Image: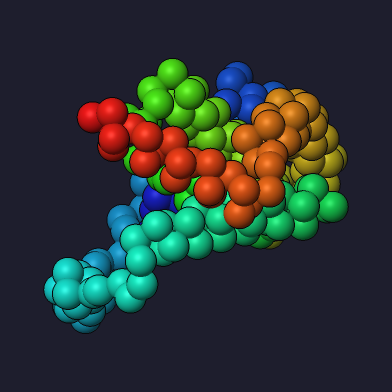
Length: 211
């Protein structure tokens, strides 16, 4: 919702500055006011649509052999995450590319969590790493959104010099995040998608036999 987005912008600003400089106090006040605005009412039609879709999903059936279906899904998730990372890293100044990267990492995180019982000592740290990567990518994206929103505000809220100061702090923070996420992403997304999917399912088969 708009109110939730406004709350994220305020929280991002506070993490970035803590005690903001005088030139940015008016911006902080505006962000706080926006976060307190009442959210729009929920759309009843949307709720009905979601309820109907939920009922339909319960009746879905997948055609094909279980292993083939699982292997295809695991491989596709890793491949999409690798592709999203490659596209985003080519230009980290594009917020939507970072956002898509984060979504694909979240997909991998969900799948990794499902495999934790198969080999806890292996998959639990992998899931934690994917969670950390997703959160860091979210922070990176939130910083871009904050800077972009500030650029739309009038000079009485944030003058040009203050906007440049904000942009510089945002970029510095993003550079620090990138220093963490790039090597983490390389490790988590390594491997041929099909080969990794086969390996995971081999481990799953062994786990079931031993159980």
